[in-house]
Image (tube, rainbow, N blue to C red; front, side, top):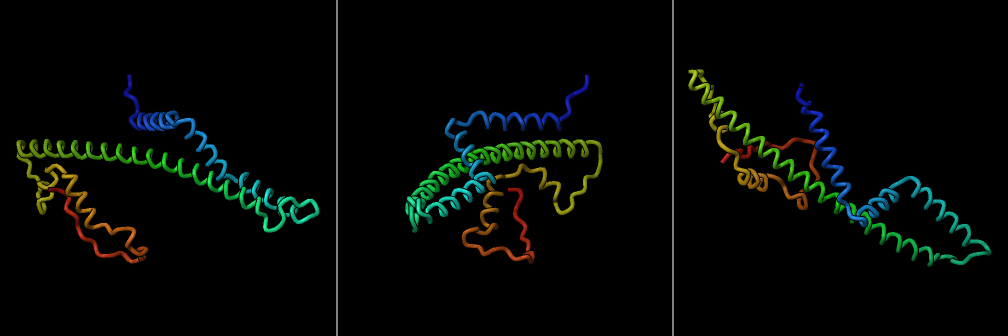
Length: 185
């Protein structure tokens, strides 16, 4: 019996996680997703063009029920905008929570992988020493990699080094100077 393909297992796991996220939506979330998808469609745009054109033509003629400045149309469009904005925000909030969940899962997997790799490197280094194999120690890189990564040190370094997006102008096309951030504590 052959073992299952890890790539296919990963794809199946991701598909199952996505399926669960879709099925866990509340009825209101499902409705908001439907409204948001429809509001972003070509049919919606074409329908509005037809609606506005018809409204303007009809209300310029003898059967006008909402003459210029089209007050009723303005009220209807304003109400539609309020509801559409609400549904879009609901959908974006749900998607942001889903993205945050994925990011937390990614971080967990990355931290676990780092811990596993550090353990493997320690084992390989120990085996190399026991077998008398000379392990190159260029600038202490191997010794540094043998230490567990301190996530708090990395986070603090990122906070110090990354600019605040609210106060930073758009980036230029020229690369700036690179300052190394501490990887280990």
